[in-house]
Length: 367
Ligand code: ATP
Ligand code: MG
Image (cartoon, rainbow, N blue to C red):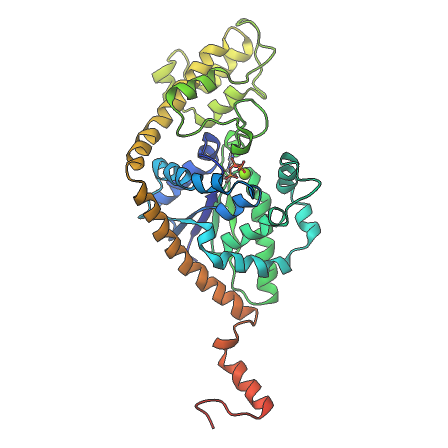
């Protein structure tokens, strides 16, 4: 079976380093591995509207920001199809049919949705669209017959929901849909990168981010003010690694070669950690190392972004072409779904013939 990728992001802000380590970096590697026959990268504007209904302008403005982030990280429109969710009406149609396959209580059990409802103060009154977004996400995945969905850990319940929908659909109707598999980062720190405040995960909606497009000065400021170990007051005090955001970020970004360049007195991160927990290593030194590493990683991304920013109409052109290509694929799947569900009346000559016989009328072209 062909290996196909579908993944995406909500245009609710620029992309941040959490997206980068959680999914984006991997996508580029997978794209360049040549192992996948098709790669679909979706800007999920319709999903973003489910909790930004009063702020359509925010969603509209961020489409191009997300596309610029994609291109500057190395997603290549000649290898990956970059498209906008709302431009593929077939996705909405699939969602409508999949809704019959899911119960309200099943949606209520989704831990990510539960958490997001709380974060958005939706407890008293949840928009139906938001509540059902896992179903819409199943449509996004299955419309492209994706086998592989590279995402952060918070998306695992969505993939599980999609698999259940596929299983149920294929059992009831016909084996049209493909069960997707989530591809989450192997590195634990990348599963859910915390915000610079050390709280929760880095998230556009929480404003605790280092954005890929931030200037070197902003990045440095964010890193230098990062949450560490509140009990590590003096350099000589033993420090704790657990919950220490700077070390979590080092786990996500640091490679041995970085020590040769920026801190040659240590061979690797493990040695640095040992010194920190022993005492005698100050937070500033560790933060400076992290700053060097993140700046090194972000510099080429920033540079490429500047280039792409010079031709914004071309960005829209890439998205338009991508959306057209994606639509063709989704339309094909929808047509298979509709025949499996027996709602393809006009293409089904057998149905027309059977009914004609039942009523004793003639069929055109036949006697
Ligand atoms: P929002 O707050 O609007 O939901 P977000 O920052 O959570 O935005 P999404 O667009 O929802 O970003 O997520 C896009 C992808 O990035 C998903 O695969 C998600 O798992 C991953 N991701 C988002 N934040 C992180 C993070 N802090 N660490 C690792 N992966 C992340
Ligand atoms: Mg999110």
